[in-house]
Each structure stands twice: as C-alpha cells, then as structure tokens.
Length: 340
Image 1 (cartoon, rainbow, N blue to C red):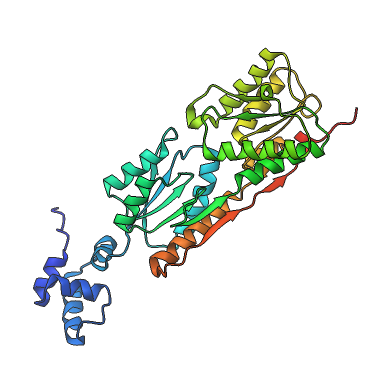
Image 2 (cartoon, helix red, strand yellow):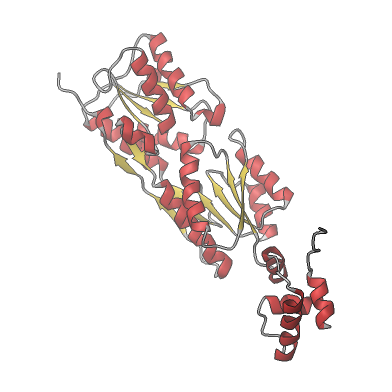
C-alpha cells in the first residue's frame, strides 16, 4: 500500500485560493483576516485533512521554538537535580528542548559554539560565566536567556551565594569544636569552588582558627572539573601519604565527600570519631550516608528560573529578576562532635 503524501500548507493555500501567508495568519488566529477568508481557509483545511506542524505555526508567528539548556555536564548529581526542576516546569511551555553539553574544561567556549550554531532561540545556562564575547553575541541575537548559578548585570539570573555557603561550613565545624580544619577542593579552579574556599577561610579567620595550607588538598581527577568521587578518594590518600589528617574536612561538593567517605572507611578510620566530613549541594545520597552538607535548593532554582523564562517569552517588559539564593546548612551525623 502506497503511503499517503503529507498535506502541506501550500496545498491548503491553493485549495482556498489565498496566499501562504494568509493561511499562516489564520493558523495563528491573527485578527487581520476577514471572516469570509477564514471560512475559506478552514474549509480547505477540513477538506484536505490538514494537520499543521507546531514548529511551522511558531515559525510563522516568530515565537521561540527551541530551548537550549547549556550545561557543563549533565551526568553529575548537581546538574541533574537542576535539570529536573527545568524539565518539570518546561512541560507547561510549548518548546522543544535540547541539552547542550558545553564541557567542564571550558564551558564558556562551549556556549559560544552553541550561539555560532544558531540552533536555539532561547537559552538557560547553568554554572557558566557570561564573558564579554558571549555578551556581545547575546546583544546581537536578542535571544531570551536566564542564568542559573552565575550572574551578569544585563540578564535575569538565579545565582547561589557560594561564599556564604563556604562560610557556613567553616562556622559549623568550628562550633562543633573541631580544631584542625581542612578542605578538599576539585582539581580545577572554578568560580563556585573558589567562592566556597574563600568563604570557608573567612570563617576560620573570623573565629581565630589557624588556616593551614597543608590541610587544603586537591584530587588528581580532571573529569567534571574534578568534582568527582574519584577526586575525593584521591585527596584522602594524599592526607594518608602526609601521615596526618585534619579533625574535620569540608568538601567542595557532595560527590567529593562521597569519595572521601569511601576512602576514610577503607583506611579503617571512623566518621566522625577520627575525622568529620561534610559536603555541599545536598544531593539525595547524603541523607542516606548521614553526611552534613549545604543545600542550594537546586530543584527549586531550576523551576523558578524556567518560570521566569516563560514570562520573558510571553512579555519581555525589560525588568530584570536578579536573585542570589542563600544556601542552608543541613547538619547530620558525619560532623557530630564525639565526646572524649
């Protein structure tokens, strides 16, 4: 049986005796079409059993069709949690979605490549800084954009106060009574990790605690900019080679903390009796490992940022929503001070 050929907008226009642009206006409920013309076009649509593609209708009305979610990685728990929030909210919007992996080594360059491709007409970025060259591309294109996990004075953004989160981690460990404090950092220097580090050091200085560089260690793993279980595992064995451990460790994210947790137990050390650890992000695993962490409310940020994008697409009034979210400490057993 020969498959039936797809009916096109051109055939509808020919049957109705009107221009293609007139058919497009009818499909998009334009008020600039007379009732008699609308009737002719609708009759032709019914006669031909024409089913317009959503993308064609949007193209005619110049509405955004494709949302690109630009993210350095979509396999790490932090990003997947933010993406869940975006995904759940995007269901209310009539957009196709592409997740664009910019790569974690140079995410800004990856974002520039996305714009050069020209495949998206609206964008959400996650943890990618907007450089001057990217800013110029956005100004030229006029693409609606919302930033998550970064900020820029000219765009809507939902950033997280990483420096405050680092300070809260240091404050918590000091108030728990730990004296020798250290940190596991990712192998690559990123804005979030550097701000968490600076906040942590701020807290140690404020509470008159020593800042000993030997207790600030990085793993070797380069994958995902070093925010991995492998890097956390490697860092603990760096301390083991040193022959000395701090009393408590703040890990720059939860996956580092999970790797550290495994290495500590493998060495026969107890948490928190021999060494306390905490992470950052509050991914689901931390609850079940009973590890203290800092909650960035990643899912909620993803939902809120997507709602804002919908508002911009519907009616961009030029107002910028620029929020910096304060994280929340979630204390668990891994940092409980054990009485001697």
